[in-house]
Every structure is written in C-alpha cells, then in structure tokens.
Image (cartoon, rainbow, N blue to C red):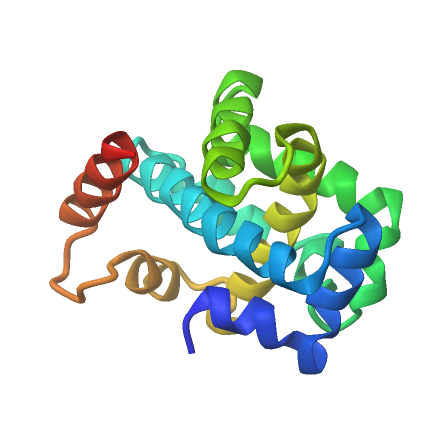
Length: 169
C-alpha cells in the first residue's frame, strides 16, 4: 500500500475524518488536499536525502508522537502534532517560503484556501512521517527503498522526475 493510501485509510478513514473536522473541510476536500500535499512532502524528503539529510530523516522516523498519529487519529487536534509537524517541515522543505509555495500550489489545484492548507501542512507532515514509520520502521534500506519509487536502485531519477512534474504545474 502506498503512503497516501495508508494515510487515507488509517483507522477506517478516521484520520481523514478528524483532519476534515479540524480544518472545516468535507472529506472530499481533505482527500484532495492530501493528494497534493503528500507527494510534495515526499518530494521534499527525496531532495533531503539526496542532499545528505538521511540521518535527520531517520531520527525523525524513530521518535516522537509522529509515529503514532495514524494509530490515534484524534491526535490531529493536539497542539503537539502541529509542533512536531512544523519541525518536520523545517527538515523536509527547508524554509517557510517553500511551505507557502506548496500550499499555494495545492490551493490552485484544489480550490481550498492557501491559508487553510498552510495550517494543514504541519499536521499532514506528521501523518506522512507516521506512515513512513509504520511502513518502514527506521532502517536506512527501508527508507531508501520507499523513496526509490521505480525500484531501480537509485533515487536520483525519482527526485528529478518529481521536480519536473512540480515545475510543470
């Protein structure tokens, strides 16, 4: 199961339901937001690994409440989830400008206000790390395998393809 599907189906859809409630969206809007935000976060993760940030990502996978948010979907309402997500965004995307750009791009594609998506992004980042933690544990080979979406043994082509797709929008 891919990461997006894992998040969407966590707790029988409870994670999406709670995310919808927290941000005042219907579940269709939330699903659409996730369809745009999760790949952007995965792209940030791939770029981070390519630029030598693997150690930091492995540390994030191993600790904190990020690893348990999909088991406890009510956690999307907790301030700690947002705090954790903001730390994750700093590692994954690097700057607030990139986060704003991701939210603006998702807004243009979903019709959901960029302000809502900016607020949602840290929670979704925590959900992504939870899914990665559940899928792969904290082994380096598992993480690299997940980032190598075409299973050719290299993530370089995956990063370039994702960047090209993002720039074409």
